[in-house]
Image (cartoon, rainbow, N blue to C red; front, side, top):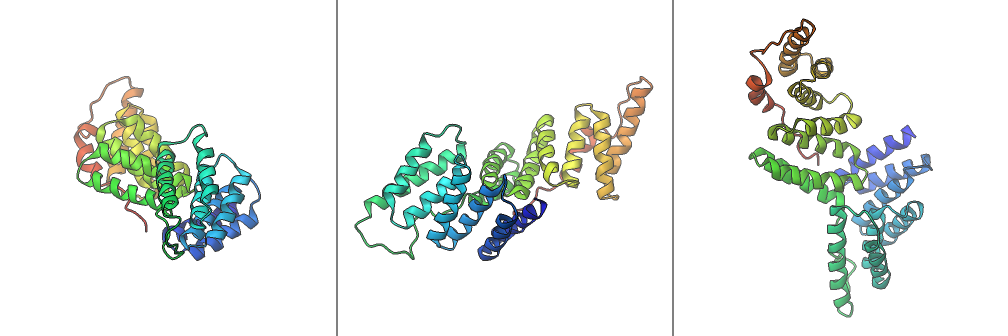
Length: 302
């Protein structure tokens, strides 16, 4: 299973670089190794690569295998719609759209994608009797992963100019789309970026939740550890904060933020043991502003 996930991760990296042939090779390895729970995701990812290369038949075949394994995997159905549309099999594509419309629990991102596919299919139906050109793909041939990266970029832009609520909105949608593609590392990075927004907005519990999501995938990520530690401190969860800062210093022993925070937390923990209340001169209210600005968000990786 680990070997399959390693191959998938390499495929994801190649996909992000738009090296689709290399991504296909890695996803094929993952498929050959793992015949269990994640198989539908590997087929879906390989289908995305075939569609990006305009290999409509191969994309349809993989998307069909995906939904045969997991009929609730919406992205697999979307890829079938794209492939069928490009192949001129519009009635089949329309039938799948109608079937997906009846599915429960569609995310907001999936609803947007479905609406775009419906619009594209309507346009294709209207043009069915006009010239058909396989070298001119329909506008439905986008990939949710590409949209996810674009939304991440928009979130980064909004963050840099201090529009944190807007950045949260972009990052949240990016997480939904990238997660549909099985791009776990990228999802973790965007969770970390969204945590930076919650930090600036003073929502410490959400900082912790997003950092938890990051660290489940990117174990030892220093930015996530420090952000979570500062949030724990702000919520007076001093031992958890101290543990985070200690872990951060194991990753980067020269981190000024982590070093100062751990020293501050050691005083606070001792004060609790001695049943005294100490207001440290370098408390988060004094230090957090300038220090947090050094914890940059992570830029788009393609």
